[in-house]
Image (cartoon, rainbow, N blue to C red; front, side, top):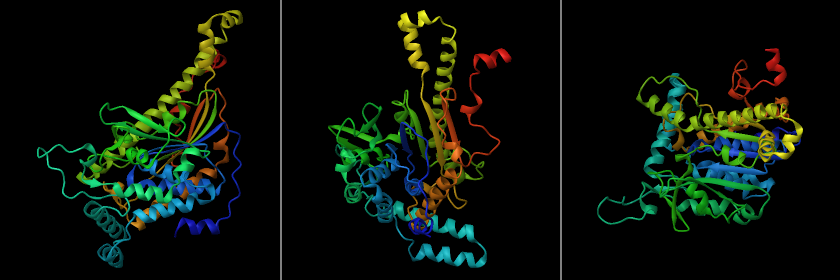
Length: 414
């Protein structure tokens, strides 16, 4: 059942959030899995939670454009319109397996059959309003081909789709700060296109999702850009770069899970490799930020042993005090969990059926997160950085909660 229908049947009162200086939405890359992010956003909209800032990479950048490019009351409908426009319904052959095989008790195999067939169609046919096979393919050595034409697929149709579902005047002049990550092909550096620093056009969002060699580099101001996920698939650090001295609530929506089963065949190996490749940076970034907060607290504890006169007169101590007065950051982490039927092709399986399932999973996970109102309390500056995840086992603490520097009183007691 579509999540838009469930919205009408679930009357949600606005969720009472504590006062935060900034509410941010962080959207990772992951291709067809991105409809999970749309489900999460529908849950946020139902709860009356509006982000002040959105940062996205790849498919997360495209979802960012749709959200920021519409008025609050139209955002969920625009997201649904976007996803329904770029997804194929299953054709007769895909439906044949999905309908016939359950009759002999092969439900999971039937779903896998349909999913594999849809992914195969994406490879051979492309997706409407998104990408199409490039014909003919550029041949090495024949003539010099611009980077914007060296790819297996042509993404020209995506510009019109973005313009159809997003108002770029609203993106640039609206209330939401927008940042999308891309990689400069020549320098290899990750850059963020930000609407507080430049006017954003469809090309900026297309560049963020230009994953080679499938998609071509996008030219912006004489430079070529690829998918930001080549360097970092999670733009959390970009959001928190400006978070000093702010109480910040982050909804971080990831599409790749670091945890999973050991692979049993080569296809499983390909799937786990993708999961680890695109999720590991999220883990590293989260742990790095937790360590930063831990060190700030440590400096603060040390400064209490410095005479007040020295702290007032010495510029080094003044700098240390600014560092020690870190942010209070609360990250609500929503991570897509693989379905049993999915394989290494899950990020380019764009069937409507699977899109609906991803969307429903995101909506379910954010609702389950809101069922824990205690998670949304503003962390103390002593805690600094906390994370919550609906899928984390209850007896497992995140690294940020297991590596806290003790206060001087705690150290003396020890």
